[in-house]
Image (tube, rainbow, N blue to C red; front, side, top):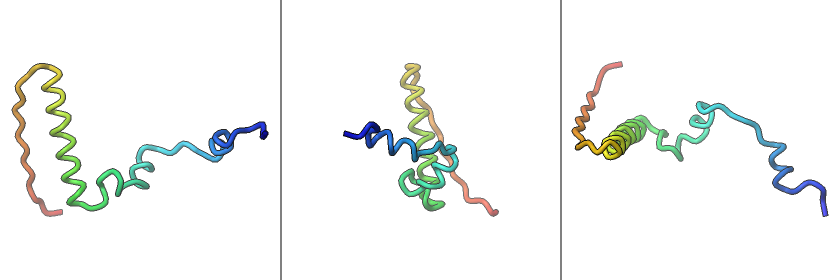
Length: 72
């Protein structure tokens, strides 16, 4: 029986990465692999978080989402 478990051996090979590096490596999983999908994901998360906060505070939510196309 080995003195080091497989999990411990694998853990030695891991390293910490920054949040931005994680997002960069996992764009497709997180919903940020295209500009359109990124916008949809960001708006959805903002609305979901707002609804959750309103619910936690027992406040009837009033949310307005306005998306405008702009020139770069």
